[in-house]
Length: 255
Ligand SMILES: NC(=O)c1ccc[n+]([C@@H]2O[C@H](COP(=O)([O-])OP(=O)(O)OC[C@H]3O[C@@H](n4cnc5c(N)ncnc54)[C@H](O)[C@@H]3O)[C@@H](O)[C@H]2O)c1
Image 1 (cartoon, rainbow, N blue to C red):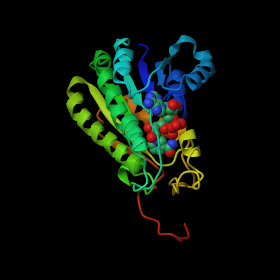
Image 2: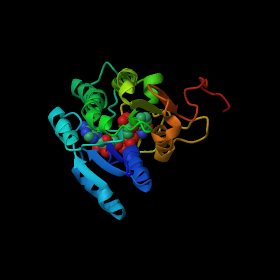
Image 3: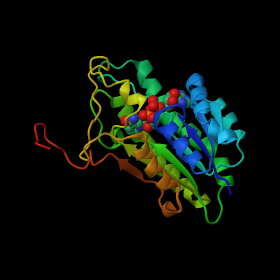
């Protein structure tokens, strides 16, 4: 039977790569984003999948819109909650508007998408096939970094939402997990890679594996969480960081 997913943040980076992989695997994908032009461009790139990619303009901070979008989707097998923003500043300098935006999109938007998707996810549950939610947390939730305190707090909140939703929803067959990537080569990171323009922010950079992640490195683990092999996995946040958080590497180390 054809499976159906909703992906938020579908117009860029990890969300876009997730859509492509799901389409390649035969899924129907509702790709949601608040950037209509980029979403149209992505949809045009997915034309070979014909009507299996369904672009939906949706701002995850707009509770009424999120509710109405998910009310139109009767059955879902998976929600991939990728929509996110990064705003950088030292805590003492951070504009309240930026703080609110980061918490609104990353924490509240993830909560809203998951809550409003839940009826359709429950409708997709079969005895052999639990429905899945995969949230995008971040390495910042596990090891926060200076100049991105609001982002770290928002991603720590995603990890806690994941744990509580997992315990509350697993009995009805909905498995909730999160991924915690380190630096991934996406437009989000490109936008802050110049420290002078990003108020001194520096991405975590090359991992012990010897490179930063590509979106597909993250999508591979997402696909595992959607697979039968992950049927007993719930409430986890899985680091996808090439070992970045595993051990502190003192400055000047020859590694
Ligand atoms: N790139 C990284 O290094 C990295 C690391 C850890 C976690 N993450 C997380 O992974 C997720 C995807 O990040 P990415 O690197 O692909 O970023 P990205 O900027 O390339 O893509 C994010 C997408 O989310 C959309 N979006 C933003 N606000 C929205 C809103 N209010 N409603 C709907 N869509 C909205 C954007 O338009 C964009 O298309 C984010 O949650 C991010 O925090 C990224």
